[in-house]
Structure formats: C-alpha cells, structure tokens
Image (cartoon, rainbow, N blue to C red; front, side):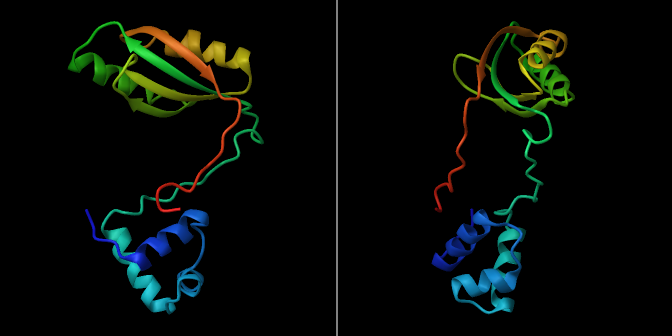
Length: 152
C-alpha cells in the first residue's frame, strides 16, 4: 500500500476523468509544474496504483447491443474444476469479465452479444458446455452509469 497525499489524490481524480491528459495538463489542473506532475505520476505507476491503460470501446456502436451478467454455479467443486472452468471461460471472446465470487454463485460473468438470440447461442453453445457448469442465472443490463469511485 502506498501513502497518498492530497495532491496524489487530486492527480488520480483528474486521471479518472480523462486518462489521456498529458502531465503538463494534469499538473496545471492540480497546481504543479509539468516535471513535478510527471514524477508523481511515474511514482504512482511504479507503485502499481495505475493499472495498464485499456481502450474503452463503445460496444453498442460496434454492434453489441446486449450485455448480460451471468451467475454461474459449478456442479462440482475442487481446485481442478475451478482452474478448468476459468481457463475455458476466458477463451470465449464474448466474455468480458470473469469474477470469482462468494455467494449463491461461484462466478459472475459479463457477456456481450449482438442481441438476445446471439446471447442464447453463446449461452447454449459455449457457456453451458464448459467444464463443471451447473446452474446459471442471467441478468440483462438495462442501463449503466459510470461513477468516479471513492476518490471522486
């Protein structure tokens, strides 16, 4: 864990809003010179506070109009079945996230599909044929709002 001061938190808030900003603009917004901002960003990066940047695609514009959260309960328990399931599910391109969770289900998947029939195809042909899959529960995403998080 890294000790963050108010300036570090301000830098992180600015970067949460727009991670493409240059150090000079981030510095201007938080009251630092470009070199001072760059050094702090570098320190945050080296400490692992900043994860590698990923491109945030507009899936709807790319033809993926349906997002489904799928709870998956494995039929069999054990280390081997967890690893087998995780290895197999991460190979499915429509699966965006795989979360191993505690509760009614063992896993929570975020799946994108072109439409509901496409999701049904993914479910029947890909998810239900994975090793160890028992019960599933699907929740279709109706809307989503991105919040700034605890630093906001």
